[in-house]
Length: 125
Image 1 (cartoon, rainbow, N blue to C red):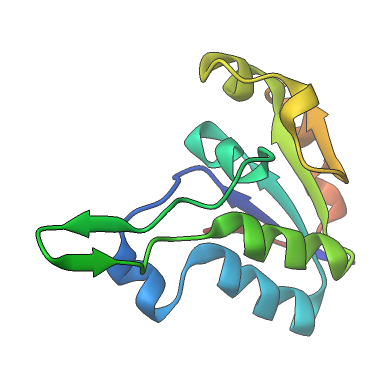
Image 2: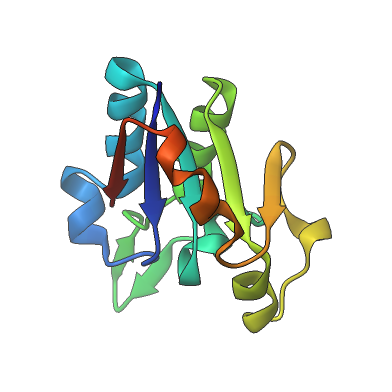
């Protein structure tokens, strides 16, 4: 049996990413235990097909340490991780299913909870 990781909170700052973010942790969990991923809340934006954020120029300093969660999400997908997003959270942000990256499944809010007993462990990242 695999593990399930649930991510609800989106990007929390470049400092977090400089050390270890939730999706990078997901890669390691998958390596050791197997993993499926459920994105809820603002984290559903990780699965939207969009370009990476451009670096910001703040005064004379270029800030290029912005999070790139899609890159980690694509890596998880390519490693065989099942990725799901909650449809209602996409809609609440004005997004539709046709904007999702390939391989991401859309589920109704709460629907996936019926599958939680199928997992050995559940992580909230």
